[in-house]
Image 1 (cartoon, rainbow, N blue to C red):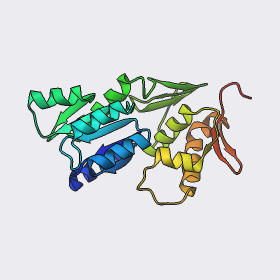
Image 2 (image 1 turned 120 degrees about the horizontal axis):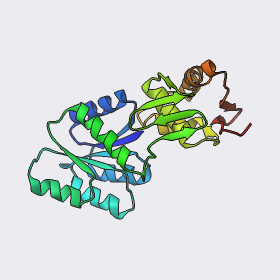
Image 3 (image 1 turned 30 degrees about the vertical axis):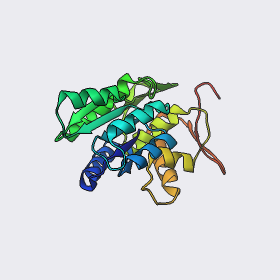
Image 4 (image 1 turned 180 degrees about the vertical axis):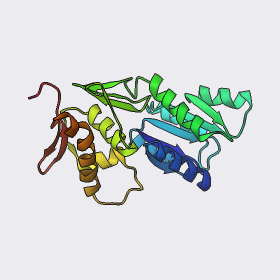
Length: 226
């Protein structure tokens, strides 16, 4: 899934970005409140990790303005404060959960999975297309009952296809959803990873469901479409 991290402390932002990328997420980073608000309203994120103490606009105000604008991505708020008042204020501003610094990166990842699991506005519990099945919360996928062993990026790519079955997805759309703004390589990385994915979801099962649409991009064929 695509995650926005709003954190002004450069070292902490880098740690969070690396940890979430290792979980297979595409991660964008904002270093202040106004930039975080702009990114969160201009892009669709599966979750937002939001620090309370930010220059330009604190996390409480940012979260409240997001909700007022109709942006409902789950927000996990980070705070160095452990007072009940600050926790209540964050939840009242529209945050879905919070973590008190210092925290475990494993717990952060688990909290994000829990938010995705319970937030039906953002993610469905299980994605199914024919005999392909993917569980976003457990980060597991199967074909014809056989579990698929995918790299984090292959998993994210399959998830994106399963969220848009039958649709032609351009390389630019795939890069925007599966990679992040920091990616500056060419679109051939999409071709490379689509081939990796084909070898795991099609080849062993004698299928050809991940189609190339010449001059346009790729499409995951819908079940029963011939």
